[in-house]
Length: 379
Image (cartoon, rainbow, N blue to C red; front, side):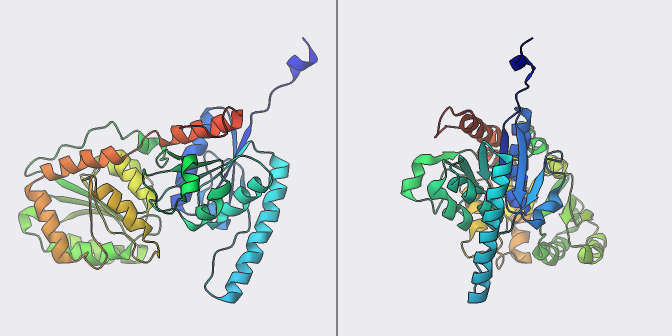
């Protein structure tokens, strides 16, 4: 046996770079699992918040880099620029040590140092945008990205000069969620149980605890008896919310966080939720109709745009936070209880927006770049 035959080829490394929130980390995790299944090594660069998500994709190496955000005051801006500069220096050293074949950014300011440093060092880069509007970090990184993967067919904020490098992949979801795509909508009889799953995303949403229990308690008794509510609540509001449901005779399961998201999506007939990119992708991939209440305080209204994309396809109803009142909610829910086929039709429309193969499509792009097959590979 020759010496060359004794040398084992070390798998190529792909470095993922993501902000430390669920909306950025979950799709990064889904891609990581896809790449690992293809035989690649994977590492993650993030901020200190990203450490909460360990073990990430089975415990891959996680590196914490400095990053900056655009503060409103001059002092904050100076501090942010300094922190970002430190992060880029840290990233350059990390890239020199790791020698990744491709760097993939998933948005959020903490994704900037590693992707920007890779662009400076002529390492191929891919950025992924989960929302229907390009985030500020990706706006900054897009001009020099080799490929721009997007979750929606129409993404606001993408410059015309960059559109030729954009590919619609969808938003990668975890395998247990993508596995729901081909499962049927659960049967709902005319007088049967209506299962509602209420989630506020990774940060929760107190508006649901404030409005929903009191509204449902006002339904006629024969409707209340049909309800089965699974709801995400803040720890300090669970006891109060449960007392309202119990007094109304409504079955409920209240928790501050759900680790069994796939199970809850599979069993429910309706989702009531914020419309962050991750939530919308999981709900549509599962093929579940939703009432979306977008977070109202984003300057670019990114959650509203995410929700509108599904509503326009007939798969969801959008209610502004100001319009999420007991009266408006009761009118909507009574329609569903009287005409459950409305939910069935909306479920199929929601499923038409789902992209269960998003992780594979994004993985194809990364693999083609890592292999040197195409500087502008298609999904």
